[in-house]
Image (cartoon, rainbow, N blue to C red; front, side, top):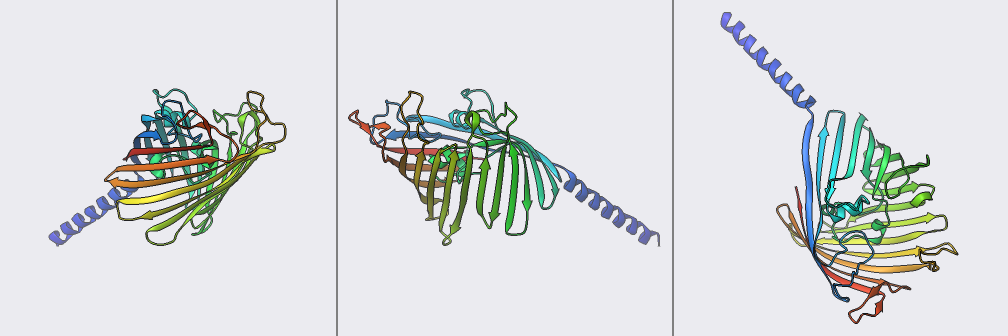
Length: 346
């Protein structure tokens, strides 16, 4: 009887210890670090490299060897609450945060969140935008250079948002933020509204601010894509923006084909247009006229463990303006470039 009683105590102790260990593991917050580093080489095919040429889209606007950015994302996740701090350095990070200092640490994202329930999460702070197909971090984009739709902003928002899982297929996000401008600040008490309705990986996005002080005005944006086969994916982005009679519109298609587990090839074909209210003038006092661009970007993506090599050829052609120069030094409506980028994600 003593042996049986002793064994019972031992098994009971093991059971209690195991339960306490499981409870401790569930309650213990998770600390994680991730990020990426990217660099590239770029040469222009239709223009000299020493004339300050650029496509007019965000990032990757240097010729020769250049640095993209380094970012470090630190997250701390509890059972219901957590925090994320995303720091970036380098030209790409500086441009994404509208900060000219490329040496000191720059805050890309910094937010806290609370999972109120299994279906509702509140986020408070600064987070990257919900609009558009592309993102700031190059490791998450197929093409290394960015589109005109992405470059038209916004990049990030400062405020509060609520994410709702309405069902297995439907999601809803509602946000109140500062208006989008160079600092994501609100000096005059104005605020912006944002919303996103999602259905099986397709998203319809809305954004509105007054348009004052560099704001964006009203924008509606669709982002999504479809797996046409196991190896073929088609991404889609379309947007329309209006800011007191002026704005932009466009569509971009992203067909991507995986030839193997380590190599894929993809094309971004984009049509982007700008329109202006009558009487709009630039900083030099010249009338602004409607214009559009057709841009094609062919990108290969080769993965070696955590390293991604991306060779890329891009050609942009404007309809009415001539913002570039050609190899003869004459004004041109076209610009082509070859780029090869290396991105390491961890």
